Each structure stands twice: as C-alpha cells, then as structure tokens.
Image (cartoon, rainbow over all chains, first blue to last red; front, top):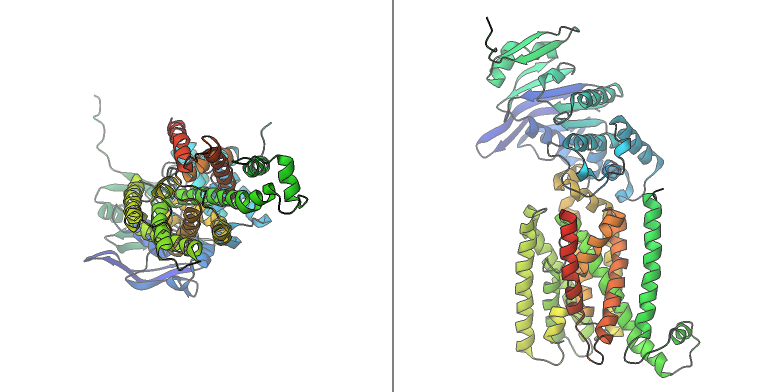
Length: 262
Length: 333
C-alpha cells in the first residue's frame, strides 16, 4: 500500500512543527525519518498514522485520504509503534500481543486461526515464546519493547509506522528487529521508522532528514547521509566513512580524542 | 503440572457458580423464619402446598430480596472491574468515583417526586439517570488524569459531597415515602420488593452484558488512550458508552440496595491475580463474585443481630477495609 503526503503542515499557535512536507512511500520500501530533537519527526509520524489532523495538506493510503478512513479500518491498514512504551499493566505477553489483532476481530471477541497464527508468529519472531505467560510489567525495558513490536507485527497491516523501534534493545535484539523490518519490506509492507541511530538508517531505501519541521534532504542513504548535511542538521561535527567490513557507511559523531601518551 | 489459563478459568467459573447456588440456597433458607433446604427445594420444584407460610415467605420476601442481592453484587463488582480498566488503576470503583453517591441522590429525589403507585419505578429511573449523568460528567474531570490518583481523589470529594447533599435532602423532605438516611450511606436490601426487582434486575443484566461485550476494547485502554485509538477502538465514543452502562448498573443497584461500598473494589482485586486482567473474563467473573459476596453479607446482615438488621454496608466496610489494605500491601510489596 502506497503512503503519500501532499504539502503536509501542522501548526501549533505560531509555530510550524511540520511544514510543507510531500513524501511518497511506495509498497515494499523502508523510509527512515531522521533529525535532531524537536525536528518534527514524531509529529510527522502521528500525522502519517492519523492520530492528529494536519493543519494543511493531506495524508493518503493509496487513494484514500486518512481522516476519512474509519478508525477500525485505519487500524487494519496501518500499525503504530509509539514512542511511549507499554505502561504498567497486568496483562501477559501473549495477551498484549493479541491486542494487535483487535482491529481484525468482531469487537475483539472471536479469535480465529489467522489470529492465533499471527500472534504465535509475532511472538516467535521477537524471541518471546518463552515469556508468553509472563506479566508484561515484570519484564525488563528491552523485553517490554519487544512485546510492543510483536503487537505491531501481529496487526499484519500493509503500512507499519515505528517510532524509535530499537531504543532500549541490546545489540543482538537490535539486529533481530532490523531483520524483522527488512522482512516486512520483502513481504511488500510500507515501513516508516523514526530513527536516532543513524547507522540503522544506512540500510533503508530512503532517508528523510528533517530540520525545524521541514525536509532538508531526502533520497537514498548515500545522498542524504553526508557529513555536511548531518553536521548542519544536528549542529555537531559528524563523520561519514566507508564501513571497514562491507560496502556500507559508518556514521560517527566527532568526539574529543583522548590525550595521546608519549 | 500447571493448569492452562483456559482450564483454570473454567474451573474458577464452575466453583464460583456452585458457591453462588449455595449462598442463594442459604439466603432463601435463613432468616426470621427458618425454612429447611428440603422445604426450599420442594418449593422451588413446585411441590409445596399452595398458601403455606414458608411458600409465602419464600415467594413474597426471600426470593425478591435474594435476587436483588445477586443483582446488586453483580452490578457493583462488574462496574468496578470496568472502571478499573477505564481509569487504569486497580484501586477504584463506583463508590469511590462518586457514582453511587450521585445515584443515591437520584433515588432519594425519585421517591419524593414519584406519582402514587409508581414510587419504585420512579426511584430506579432517577437513580439510573443520575448514575449515567454523573458517570459521563466524571469523564470530563478524570479523562486527563487516567492512571493517576487525581481522578480518584476528585471522585472521592464529589462522592462525599453527594452523600451529604442526599442526607440533607432526606432530612429536609422528612417523608415516610423516602428510605432512611442509613439506606443512602450503608445500604440495605430489606426494601427489595418485586416492583423494584422487576424493573432494576433487567437493567443490571443488560448493562453488565454491554460491559462484557466491550471487554476487549476496555483491555486496550491499558496501553493508553492513543494506542487504543490506533488499534481502532474509538475511545471518544466507547468510553462514554461504558460509563453510561456503569451508570445504569450502579443506578439500578442503588435503587435496590442503597449505597454499599467496597464490593466493587475488593471483588475484582481478588479475582485479578487468579484470572488475569482480560475483561471478557474479569467482568463476568466479577459479576458472579460480587453476587456471592453481597448475598452472603446480606444473610449476615439479617441474622447476626436478629431481630435487628445490620446495614449491609457496615459489614462490607468492616471486612472490606482491612482486606483492601492487605491486598494493596501485597500488590505493592
């Protein structure tokens, strides 16, 4: 399903949090949204998911304009991993993952074979089968995040919107989550992720660099992830070098070098 | 070997249903006139002679009172479970939120303005209307504070004021048509007539069924209201609908048995560790558990100090208060 926006803006008072953004995200692609704190990344994601209505411009899922899509159907078309994580609740891992099936079930009551299969697969994909009957609130932060991602996967929606999917995860599970996201792309899903870790952005199809609510660069990673653009956008010197192990990029913030010993 | 969740739930429902039947039998049997279980059973199967004293006591007094106790317990505990989902805290119920207090004021007004011959119906109607009205109003005060104690404190403040206003109203009206002040503070099932039961019990059944039907959506609220909306649960419409259903259940229960505290709090709190928080189980389980508790406490209320009847709310609070403290300590330990 194609996700696209036309001249999208979101204004609060005098301030434009998102300003005139036009994007086209076709099926089977991964788009990373990057930028410094307060650049408008999360606001853009909430506009894409329909949580908030734009002040100007529009968001489209194929030929349907988002505000006109009823809530239940919208939830069948797109899943959201919010920046706020699963709170203090007394549900088990399996019960929370099953909540992702809510939009597909008649008022959430009947659970069919497809539902059970989606729940099981999502738990297996995120290495949660062992924690199935544990209370979510008894888990670590990273485990809770995997539960949240599994809930999003169980929703099996053509569009997947992720706000910082890998924060709080150890390096091994970061790789697991990235593999899942690439798996979604290969199955034809449209994936959009807000990222802080710029090295993860290097494997995306498209990267959108935001500053003060506007796009300052957009395109394939090698075009957007340049030392000059990132240094300007983040207000800190950033080096982009060739990856020593493969033909990708490695992005490093410049730090004061340690004093050299004579 | 551990039981699977499904078989544990099935076992729980079976045991609770048996226990409910036992306390219903005891409630029919015990009282000012003790009627043996054999007599109750032969009456229930239509084999007792017409016009016998025990038959008249059972069908005229004990049965409506027992049905009222079942409905009151089911309404209060199921509402408590649903409110805990909506407020995202396990320590809230209709009593603490002030919904019972509002319904009490409505019931008192209902009895005062009722046309001759329709006092029960008017009381139920006004109780339900004020229950719904206050339930929806409370959303305006507490929506921004769900998951915090601020919402609960607002409810406690409003509930105490409503109880005081009800008290002033009852004293100023000073009418034999209106139940006593004690009814509006500590409840009593002694006034449960067929007229009340016939109107209030179907309302309780319907509203608990609505809450059960909304259960999976109420579960999502644990993820927060925005995440619930993202999953297709229209919080702006469905939460007011749930609060209205709670208003109906609580309004009908206050008309039947007055204002009774702690049932809505203790029952879900006790069941949650056993069955989990999934509302499609929690709501019916709480309804059965609440029915057991209220029927049992009503038996105590009329037998402990017979012929004097102890207000049932005094008993639920005497036992419920310490149990609540213990449960919360265990929960937060």
